[in-house]
Image (cartoon, rainbow, N blue to C red; front, side, top):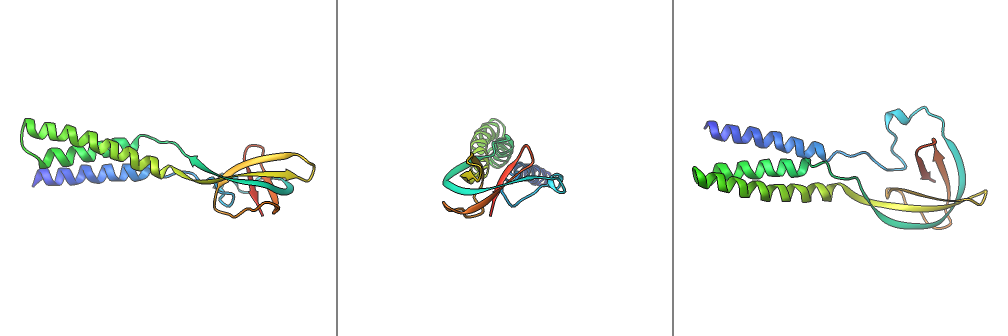
Length: 155
C-alpha cells in the first residue's frame, strides 16, 4: 500500500511540474501584461503590404523531459518485476517517458503566428511577428503600437 501511495504522490508532483512548464507568455497583439498597462505608446498608421504564416517557437524548458522520465521510470519500475528486473524496467520506462515528455512539451511550445509587413504613411516598411489571433489582409488600414521595445499590429 505504501508503494502505491508513493507512486501516486510522485506521479502527481511530476504532472504538476509538466503542466507548469507548458505555461507561456502570449505574443498576441491583444494581450497586455500588467506591467505594460498605463504606459505611453507611440502610434503609427499604415497599410498591410503582406501577411505570412509563421510558427512561433517559445522554446523548451526541459520540464517535459524530466517529468516524463520520472513518470515513466516510476510507472515501469513499480509495476514490472522485482530487484534487477524492476530496475531495468524503470530505466527503460524513464527513457521512454523522457522522450514522450519532450515531444509533448515541444508540441505545446509552438503556435501559429503571423509576420505582418506594414507600409507606414511616411513610406517606411516594418515587419512585426505576433500570434495569429486576429485576421489581417493586404490593404487593411492598421495601427502599429510601440513602446520602444514591443510593437504590435492592430486594426
